[in-house]
Length: 164
Image 1 (spheres, rainbow, N blue to C red):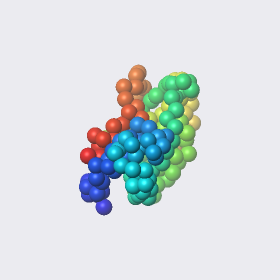
Image 2 (image 1 turned 180 degrees about the horizontal axis):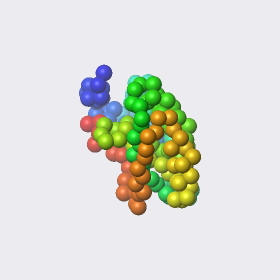
Image 3 (image 1 turned 180 degrees about the vertical axis):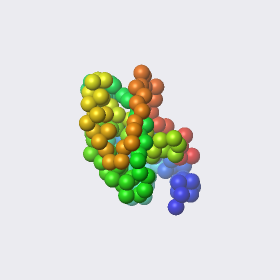
Image 4 (image 1 turned 90 degrees about the vertical axis):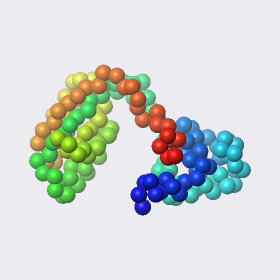
């Protein structure tokens, strides 16, 4: 079932639940019910359904990487030597084992993947690039772009704008 068809199955209460939880994942069910205008029992049932149907995939704390000293961000274009399914699967499995790689997206364009890599410094990044990224399966080449400032980061998502 496509995303737009699944979104059609959400009513206004479901959308409000998702919007409230995207801003405060630790809100109590009682407070959530009050915020969306339902009683506790139907809110709890909707919450369980949204979790079971994977609209809600988990809850986590958003940690400030800058306060942890991880303020060097690089975006890396990766070109592969082979883009058949087995090569893509090997590459995908390998990138998931590198903790400094925060995000990886397969791209339709002049390169194959775009990675977001977070480290403490440029020298740490150079080591990650040389010892980890460049040794990933089927890597033909990379291009790096260093971020100067984060304007919008995860956690700034307004689900209300997306699920309506």
